[in-house]
Length: 137
Image (tube, rainbow, N blue to C red):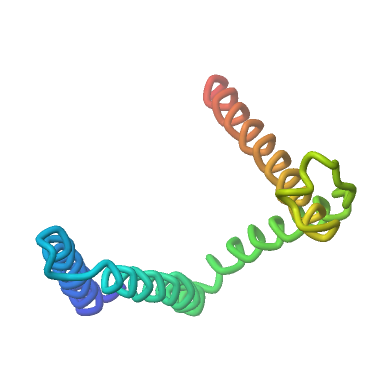
């Protein structure tokens, strides 16, 4: 990142923090209603979402080799979610009928749980492998 852009982003960051702190103080003194804080949170969320989408795209355009490894990671996640979706069932127990709206929602919940299990096991295996491989170096 260029020095000028970095300096500008730092100024924007401090300005956003200043406005947030000012709104917080005004809220606790009773000058500002909670609705304004909620809209400010929406604005910050939108700004963060835009930054989370735009800056990685810019970085990938600048460094195509780094983009390759990132896209491999995204592809691996897509494969994990695809496997999880294929393994997920859509059956529902009566005791969960108040929480889950139907078979489609049950399949999505099952997909999320199975993908969590796969990713958790992969993280544990990677951590153990890293520790063991350091012992033998």
